[in-house]
Length: 301
Ligand SMILES: Nc1ncnc2c1ncn2[C@@H]1O[C@H](COP(=O)(O)OP(=O)(O)OP(=O)(O)O)[C@@H](O)[C@H]1O
Ligand SMILES: [Mg+2]
Image: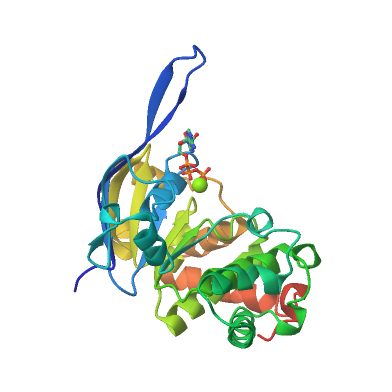
């Protein structure tokens, strides 16, 4: 099967000036290659500053690669003009870590979700239908769509950001640390929501996190990034059972920025549970523990 997305030798150099005022180039992404199959769930894991967001932005051509290629559905994005690129970009969306800065505080939820639809000429009746359906999908009641972002909890805001990413009917979603700003119990809800949505809408994911356990829970294949390079990539089970790279082994041995979620997963691993069962078990427990969490009290899920 032809992959939906391919990165071929992608390099991104950030240009800036050093303390001495001289121009310097910093290779934030260094010769990165991977492919994601249609409907795949590909994880990218690495410590803070290793180049994950830079790579995500390069893939979407928000900040194009310095060299190398990004091929989406057989088309080299570098070969497209701005207009064609804009059309292609609708099929690829990104959800960032911080739902506060992702939503304009002066716009209602309805207006935030309308923006892209207006740009492509969807009329008001169809917009309203679609926005209600998407809010419903992410567990936010559409009766709340006239409210502003500050009237929602952080978890609800991230649900709204996810709904907005879906307004363009994308096939490919980049999730860049989408739950890192959320409490552990809410993290689990949002992770499970993302998995449900993926299945329902047959999406392809690139899931980015510094938390290898979370990536293992979400993804069937994992690439480990270190200082701009992919040092290892393999199916999740294989990466855990037979890590080949020293850095991967270190990540597995001492999980950086270990969250409560990872700690709970760790505890289960220590008891000898398989990583996949463990993670699913922990996440579903966290979800049921917080079923009356105000975060979704007004939602439809
Ligand atoms: N626009 C920019 N100009 C110059 N340097 C940048 C720019 N954006 C990022 N960098 C640098 O590139 C490197 C990679 O940053 P990036 O944000 O991609 O890392 P990351 O893996 O996403 O980190 P985090 O886990 O903290 O989000 C860092 O050293 C960062 O300081
Ligand atoms: Mg980042």
